[in-house]
Image 1 (cartoon, rainbow, N blue to C red):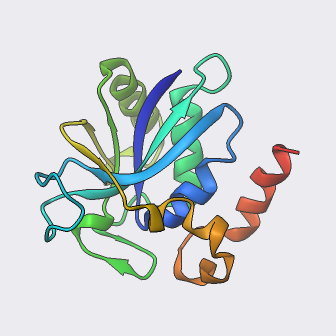
Image 2: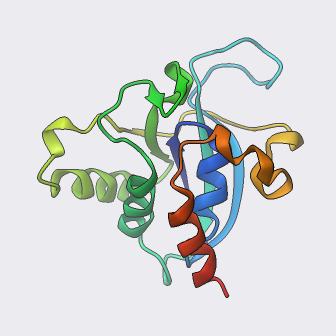
Length: 162
C-alpha cells in the first residue's frame, strides 16, 4: 500500500469520486502543506486534499492523476467550480519522489502542459479533517450540488466497484 495526497477543490467531491477508482483502498479527507496542527485554527496556507491509500499493483500514480484530471479544471488557479480561495487550489503531494516524478511526467506528456496550474510538491504537513467531513457526500448525498465534480462520471466509477 502507498499513499498520495490529491487536491482538487472541495475535498467532499474529490473524496467521493476518488474512492471508487479501482485500486484505491482507503481515503481520508484532510489538509495538505499548511502550518497549523489543528483544524480549528484559521486558514494557514493549506490545500483541501484527500489522502489516498492505494495498491500500486492495481492502480498507478498516473492512473490516479488521470482520474483527478477528470474532475478538475487543471487550468484554474485557486478555484474549482464555485469554490474560490487558495485552499481550493489543485495539487498532488507525496512523501515519495517517484510519485512526484510520475505526476510531473503525466503533466508534461499532455499537449496542454504549458497551461496546467496543478502544483506538484513534496508533502510537508498533513492534518486529517474533522469526522463531519469524512465521506461527507456518502453520508449526505443531498449536498452533491455543492461540489463541482461531474456526477455522471462518479456513477461510472461507482459501477466499476460492483
